[in-house]
Image 1 (tube, rainbow, N blue to C red):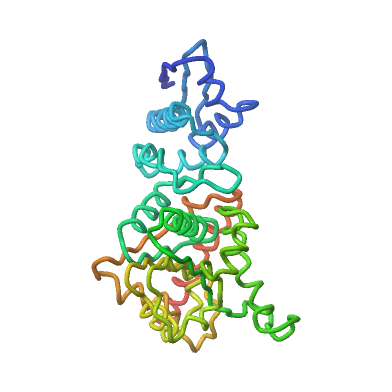
Image 2: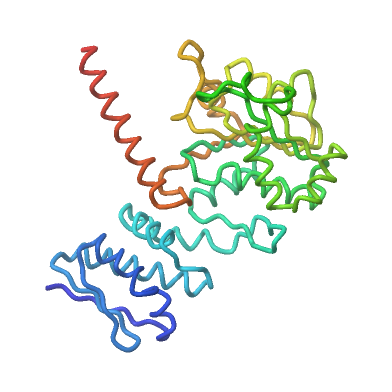
Length: 328
């Protein structure tokens, strides 16, 4: 039996790390097949395998780090710590703390929660154009909107422009009631929701009416030059190559662009290639253009979303292998 002891700072720290009814520590025990218990200000980890005991110890120390930085220790943080330990990157977790991107209308600090999100925020600040690509729930759009609001409040830009391609994902636009704007509004709803949270509905409405904030379908961008603006293109996997080129060439002086999307959720007809997939290849080595690729570890929604994303990715890999064997 291998045993390891961690000396903590206080009984309060142990309580926070273990969680209500030991729910946090139970996740670590299950992940590494070890037994963990506390005695005074000590945490003891026991197991049959030295690597498992060491990894469990690293996970516990990561949770202690959250406590030291006055950050919440919830299931999401525990699962993230376990994932980072498994890939040997647990030391990177501390780099995420302290970066407050924006403060919401309700006074909630909006911060990156994973290393991938932190890198994404840094790339947006550094580059004129940034691509954020990855699965649902990784905060691609949410963090981009938060950074746009911050840039606007700090007078770095004069306008915020958010756009999406109005591509049908099984539903038909023609069956929706109202004029064209009414029909496309459901596609833009996630962007409205994020702005409401950052600015409050009253402030957003005033800025929207003045044209300072614009939320519109991608088709509305044609023929324009967008100066002094923070521009976000969401769901970019559903752009055609022509639409993507059109959008990128709208960039004006003192402007910043963020393009987000998930290349596993393309709703275009099979005969059309995704403009996002093509742009990532063409612009890979261009200066002042950053690319951040999120993984399932960066998902910050319900834990099942992470599991679903991972399951679909594994299925897609298996399907691709089967197709390769058939072609051979």
